[in-house]
Length: 410
Image (tube, rainbow, N blue to C red; front, side, top):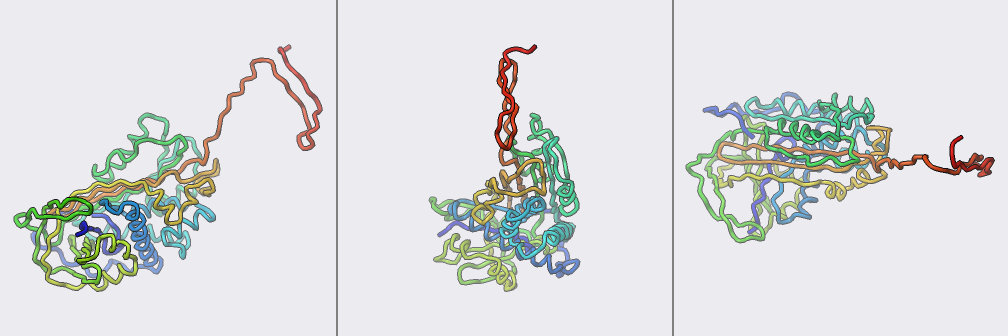
């Protein structure tokens, strides 16, 4: 039996994040509609986000088939979304294609990100859900005003200048990250590279109680058959309740609601004879849309593991594999960020945390997109403090007009 694959998904975006707030005695009224209709651009951005989510999942799973993994495609998308405002030409095209928004103008993409950030954070007052963005530039390195203004206007990003050579620079950035994730993600940044001049950071935090909480008295230790390991045990929580349920050929799924139902966790369990990697390879945005559309209220005898996971991955190889290689190369064009030097992406680091228990779920994610000069300007010492030769020449023809040697200064 393959290991159980748990994918936490926002029912709106299909992205992985997680949960919980107060302890009401009665569940709140079930949210039936969004506060406002989504625009056509927002619907396209959401569809693109879902497509990117499963593409990223498959790409990571290809190199880590037997490992636990937990990512927030929304966090990655927002961090790279800020970087897109500085990309030009084929670099911008590759980023839009990888993120699945190639059919939208940069203006539409920015507007959709801005409106979705505002919408997602106000759907359930009982759920603690926060999105924070920031831009950290190296002190005295010129950044285009239009780039930072796009970060402020569309991503509500904090824009800061910092002395990257200071011993406290790494701590300053890490403290910001820890504060935005309620200390669930700490020490994200270990060092700042000599070539790095900018960090674009997204942080997401979500904490919410189950709409139908598990009774801890029913939690029992039971066997759990992991991938490539001896059979182990897990603490399985238990419910016998009606939940939205989907029964497919390769897997079955149950949808567990938080709070007023704006957010949910969707758990996919492979059918007997199928592995979790079979399910991952077959997942895409279209299949996800079918799954969520066909969920039906069904009485489910649910046993779900209680677990806690921390995950880190440098996403550069995955994004290169998805077609964004030019953004990490010497051919990258990020002249919209700065014209002081040719720039490239140096890293897209991603770190997450999730804890699932009887009360609910708590999760956090951080993505750091690093930007640096393609090659550091070389400074060659040239101190003329001894005898030297010099020439005066016509540069284009190469003709030497004067030639001299100085052995001492008169």
